[in-house]
Length: 223
Image (cartoon, rainbow, N blue to C red; front, side, top):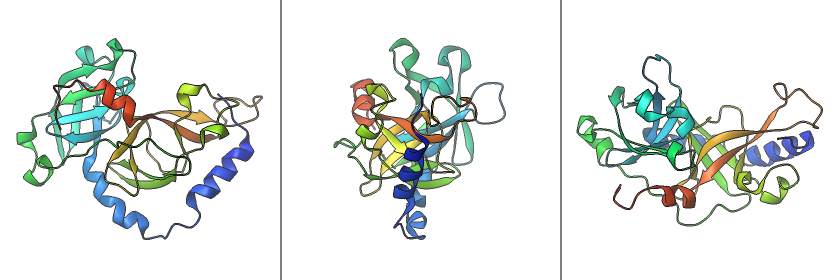
């Protein structure tokens, strides 16, 4: 999927202008909710996820792989914990995965934490924070009309790409509220349509919005 390179420049400029350098320092608490996802037999993280609380971890289905075969581990608070499979999106046409960990193994300060889903949908230009175990990055929600010409409707919930921001499974948090706005699951590439796709710049990242995440989570799962 391609977008005009000019759009990339405009979006990135809008994303980073006007933010004080110290803003990210106050956002670092969100890294507590960012986890690494390991596939069995792999030493390096395959992607990231979000700790929602009450032993529930959210990630992208393509990050954990078919959980029944991959048996992913969750890296959190310096630990690598085995998981149970709460819901595998491979069987529900959703790029989402819910994993369970034993919260009794977590530090009390983390085990008691909860991250609610945002109740209000993302709005164009809304400031967001993307969190990974390595740190946080600020960005903004891309106005859907800016993506209309090149991206199917289902991929128009996106944030401006900023270098250092998280990849698949990273949480997108509302900057002005303590809630999860969505989960990053794919890149949106730029270029003029004639460029080699592998060399085309990343200009945005699609995220699954909180409303779809809420619909995916079984009513019996509490966090």
